[in-house]
Image 1 (cartoon, rainbow, N blue to C red):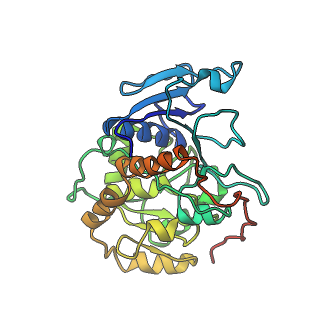
Image 2: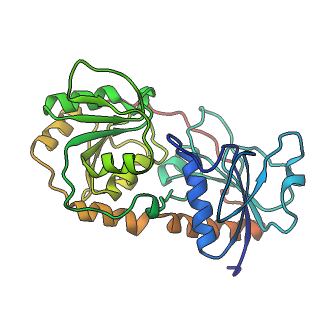
Image 3: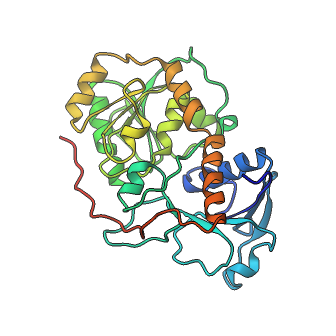
Length: 320
């Protein structure tokens, strides 16, 4: 592998992100991870972006893309879907969501988990990784006060309704982070969109993350955020969850009654083990190393996927 590479990350969003933002955080953490490893990073992104560890070039839609990329760039990474980028420089394309059945993707597409790749007829993936500096130290003695819902509450596939059912069945408080609303039940608390220390405090006080999603989850950043702070995951076995949540850090079932019964028995998981699982597999340094291997591959003129990725028909996901 080349000692120092010049990597250009292309993202349409303003960086750094504040409040809600999943893919933007991944861009930021990847850039930081690559920079900490000694590589030159340029962010071609929203004009109002700022970054202390990478050069920022304002992305201008009116100018041809290749004309905006530094001439000495070794590789370009797009953080959004793009088909046949009009550039001569080696590139990769990160795919952060699920496509529609039959939708095609660039052969250099990178997915977020093995299942995410398989669902799009592909094989190339790199797990996301968080920056531990943003989450602070793990506190094994932190008082646990509530279950946690951490997602965009307005998205039905995140199944807030199921999480509320679980919390009510167990007569336990539920903190809802990722949406605003109201409830007649004082145990159900909408906390809006949190960031920074406020979000970390809610994570530290969480008994467990409830994640009974109703779709093929591409990755699920909320899971590694919760696990980092020692909160095990109780969710459905859809999409990436079986890869991210082994049996020693969480419990998976497509039956809500099974999840309720398991939680009623108590939390058998070692919170320190949950934290270590993330530190061993899902930090931004791991993500950066994974992408560096792909940069070298496309630099040699190889395609990341042997066949053109095509989104497969998605099975109907539900919980009983």
